[in-house]
Image (cartoon, rainbow over the protein chains, first blue to last red):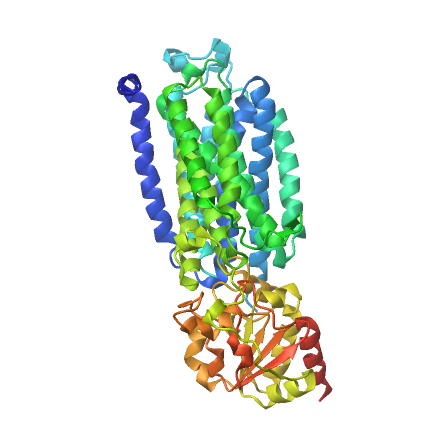
Length: 106
Length: 516
């Protein structure tokens, strides 16, 4: 256990970004609450499918693996991550648009 | 106009970042770049900008993509700008994708294109084909897909190096965390999908809350196992068995956590899984040291949590109570009393039409039963005919009507119901002036037992339709609703039942209205 902690102290460079990332995470959560808290019930479903598509941002990770990974990892994990992330992104935005098209004012 | 300027600005920055990432031959390099430190193998691959500057520009562009998401979500919260909001968010995604590709030198596009084509086709076809009634199932599947993608990204990060000791401490911890949230989201969503579809496995209806002894103990055990494996992984990155165990245990946990949750609570579950899928992407961001993923994932996590809270409030339940599951099982004693031996009044379409025509104010309370019967178009036509005859028609849409947040509004929008006719629980204020409250395929949201403290749904906000002059309930039978709870409303003196399929019944009313 102490070995790990000592190692962690030695890795202060690496834990540095971690603490910054934690701050970013907390601020982003607060921002999310602030932005979304007042959505009318009418739009709950499109909001959910739209935000669902945004969670497909993990496609960035998929791109890095599929594009710059090596060996079997690239072909197996890279391909799978690309497929699932793309389903999430493309399907999410497309279905949200389809729903919102029905909400147009008459 | 301001939006267009922002878009232009972002495109310029993206273009710059893209140009920076491209390979440049030494011959075309200006002399000043000679001092750039080379971390690449050959000088041929030497980029124009130093890696530090490039990283800075890339991160800046991710931040801009995140800003697009924020504004997209903001615009999604108003009916007027919602469609453009979705477009803005998708533009943010495009920016993130382009800058990612531009940030790496020598990207191999074969796997990327293959994965994109397969995933894109599946997503697009699913999005085009799905009926509006099937929207909750599809959102559940998309959630699961996103969660799985994040988990796979973490797997790839873990297995990409042959010497596991190269993993640093924060990477080991966050990889474990991403595997947990990602897999849990994936299998949880699959179970939610099965419940929403009404699937049966070996004669057991998935939609029922499936409870067995020691369930919560088992879940806790699984969670502890995941934590233990996570610690093992953090202490010794070479323990790949721990990573595998996390994947398996988290997948099992996702299934077991969703199984006990009853059908009526699905809006909560879908919202919660939506939140999880965002948190999974966020955790993957910690693994990859990518602020773009962290910010965007947290936004989705927050939005899902807010919807979860709204849904819980609309049922007057706590999240813990929903997650504990088993809700709505004791059909016989539900509401603290039996309703056997009581009689109901019935009407046919002709009589119902006469009552509706004589009314001044009609409130329609639609439930999921209306959507299952595909009766929303007939209902909208009936409402239009009544409006033409001078009857004021309003729809009362309960926050948890349907199978996901806002589901009923989408279904009514599909049937071209004017936005102005939609109301939520505020309708209760005018209920005493209502001549006919027409309940179509709804049940629990009009159950007056919610006002009794000993009821299972005690305190759940309902439409007080029993205060209307006449209540018409269009329903197949007296069977209890999705929550499995009996409804004494049906036996009230001012209630008449219109037994039958919602679409057939409403269509005959439409026929009668046209016949006059």
